[in-house]
Length: 181
Image (tube, rainbow, N blue to C red; front, top):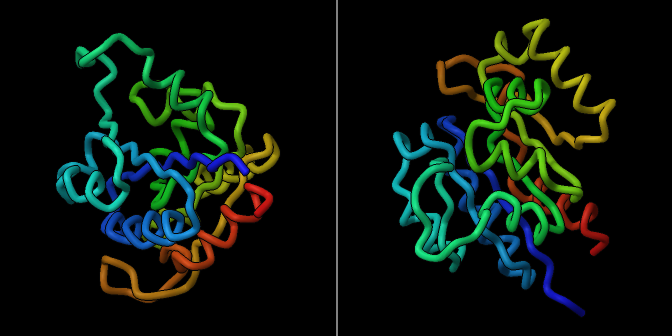
């Protein structure tokens, strides 16, 4: 059986460290994982960590950085992906995808893919319950995007509520289901 390819998009949320568990879990299943980081994610955590855990070169947000060899990276990513997972998915990335905004590698890859896309939201409860965020989530669900979580838990702001990222093992289970494994 051909090895599956999963793109994991990591956005700027305190929960971005949970992506390491998702990457490790997918790799332990023999799945090839490539991390795509938004520019803001690099403010939280160093990209080299994602490269080390995924075993692959990471992709950062810069669409206009000259590649080592010519390749339309966002299109290549989109075409080779069997699934794209965004964990954590911030209100910002959800809004961009819902509006069709393609201003970085991750949003361009999502726009260009035919693979299933799974989003694992993580944000403050008030943000998640915001009418605009809920409208964006509803729009994406109607368009066939998949969501897992968020769940009730301790949030970065110090409160308890809905907005905590889904457990990495549940995210992995959802990915396996989308991949038919």
